[in-house]
Length: 378
Ligand code: CAA
Image (cartoon, rainbow, N blue to C red; front, top):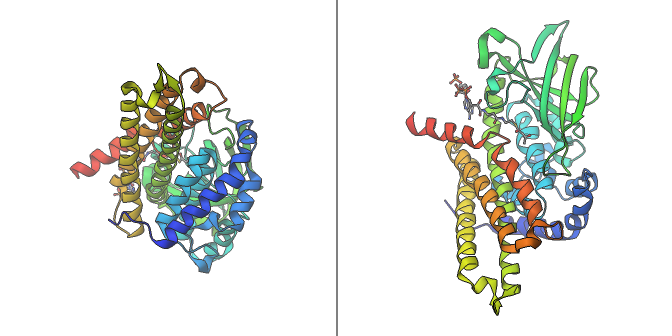
């Protein structure tokens, strides 16, 4: 594994860091008040950030997977909201079409997604099927050349804002996970109903909604891959998706560490900076070590994915460890800041609220352990 970034990757890192400071930082207050960052996404589209790993022939930037992970990491350091919007749009919104779509579907949707004209989303989770994704109840029945979809989806990131959704439904309930199929559904399709917005603990600028499918007619041309291949499409894309969430977690943890180091150097108690007091100095040392270990896991998984090496286990390890680190480091950051850390005058309470979901979405930490342990014994 090469731990050194290429010149191109370093340029991506610098570009995203500069963009985060000039465009995202001034928008954080609005996102915290619940505003979806449309303007930011439009600018990201202009810079090619909405299709980083998409080949140029489909309108993307044609860059490698590591460059994409660098972008999620750096964006999330400023705003985990922007990080998750991009991660879901790319990893599970665009890639299923890129990897499993036919040429017509790729031509029709990928350039729009890669340019940012369209935002993507992924509808797998249901009220009764979270970790047990294969237990989904949404049904798709073939009728007059279309599929008619009925069911409910929950916790849909980018829902309501997205223009195109990858929707999973069962075409053969008796076949269990082998009866699940994937469909491309455009916003505005009759019977595709955007429901309640979730009021979340963090990621305030990202939208999370319920969706109902009520006799929603989807043209047969929008079946992604073959009937019954949907579960593999979902899990295959979640491997890469989980590296994105791991990078998001790394961004949060790194931001919390940097703010803590800065504050601990500036804040004096008992006649010297608190960083020079062992209680805080050792805390910072543990935080920095966990962040560094997360970085190695995240970029190892990215390197493997980029080189087409099976990385389900490593992606799960990166997500498990980096999300736990984000939670631990942001908790400790509040402790370093003391009473100030508990106020909204400093960003560490935001990091703490944003970190928690990283241990839940795209597979809970328990599911990551399940994937890792299955890989160890199979
Ligand atoms: N890639 C491709 N195929 C895979 C796969 C992978 N990573 N993992 C499993 N499969 C295949 C298996 O090979 C198997 O097929 P075969 O029988 O032909 O071999 C089939 O899928 C079923 O596999 P399992 O028996 O292992 O499936 P399971 O139902 O026992 O368990 C699970 C799978 C790991 C628990 C899985 O259901 C899972 O990951 N659950 C978590 C769901 C999840 O991550 N949801 C996230 C929602 S999206 C989201 O959160 C986005 C967001 O908003 C931010």
